[in-house]
Image (tube, rainbow, N blue to C red; front, side, top):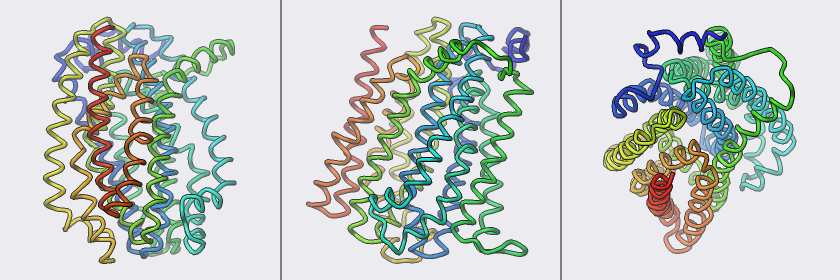
Length: 457
C-alpha cells in the first residue's frame, strides 16, 4: 500500500495537520494559506522580475512581452483547469479515505496534462505569426515576440505538469511542499534572468531569448521536484498498468470539472486579448503600461489565489466527509476577507503607484498610464476576490458550469463591451473603469449564486 495511505492511517497524521476535516475552519484556512501565499508570491515575483529586466531593454521589448501575456494566461488557465479538476476529485477521495483511488487519479491526471501539452505546443509554434498579428502586434515587434515564444512554447511541459502535480499534493492537505516548489522556481529565475538577458560574465547576451530560457530552466527544476515528491515521497503515482477503461473513467471525472474550469480560465485571456488589441490603438507605450500594470495587479491578487488554493481542497475533503456545515463557514470567512483585502490594496496602490511604475520603465508615457490603471482598476479588487472564492467552491461542488458561466458573464457581458464603450467615451480611463465595474458586478452575482447553491445541497 502507498506511503500516502500509511501516513493517513498513522496517529501522527492529525498532528501534522494533513486532514482538513477536523480542526477549526478559521485555523485551517489561514494557517495553510501562509505557505501557499509565500509560494504564489514567489511565482508573481517570478513574473515581475521578468518584466523588470525586460523593461531595461526598451519599450519595444516590453511591448513584445506584453503581447505574449494573453497567451501565457491562456496556457496558465488550461493548467489551472486541469489542476482544479484533479484537486477536486483527489481531495474528495481523500475525504472518503479511498487512497487507492487517490493514487489512480493522481497518475491519470499527470498523463492527461502531458497529452494536452503536446497538442498546445504543436498549435502554438505554427500559429505565432497569425495569432500575434491578430492581437495587434506590428511587423517590427513580431520578430521580438517570436524570439521569446519559440523558446517558451517547447518548454510548456515544465509549466503545466508541475501545476497539476502541485494541485494533487495540495489535495492531500500539504500546502508547504507546493509553496516551496514555487519559491524555488522564483529563486532560479531571479538568478538566471540578468545573466542570460544581459550576458553577464561567461553568459551570452540573449535578451528576450534569455528571459525565455531562464523561465524554462526554472520551470524544469520544479517539474522534476514535483514528480519526485509525488512518486518517491507520497507514493501517489503508480506505474502499474490498469485497464484503459479505468483511465478513461479517471479522465472523465477530472475533465468534468477540468474542462469547464479550463474554459473559464481561457475566457479571461480571450477577454484580455480583446482588450489588449483595443489598447494597441493607443500605441506601444499603452500596451507596455497595460502589461506592467497587469503584472502588478497579479502580484497584488496573490493573497486571493493563496486562499482559493486552500479553499478548494478544504471544500473537497469536507464534502467527501459529509461536513457541509464547515463548507458554509469557510465561504463566509473567505468572502469577508476578500472585501477587507480589496479595500486595503486599493488604498495601498493609490498611495505607491507613483513609486512602482518607474521601476519597470523610464518612458514617461508608460509611467503615466500605469499609474492611471492602478488608481482606477483596484476599486473592484474585493469583488474579484469574491468571484475567485465562488468559482473554486462551485468547481469542487461539481457545479463547474456555474463557475464557467460567471467568467463568461464577466468577460462577454461586462468587461469587453464596457471596455469598448468606455474607450469611445473616456479613452484609456474608460477601459480601466470598465475593468473595475465588471469585477464589482460579477463578484456580486457570484456571491448570490453560490449562497443559493449552498442552501440546497
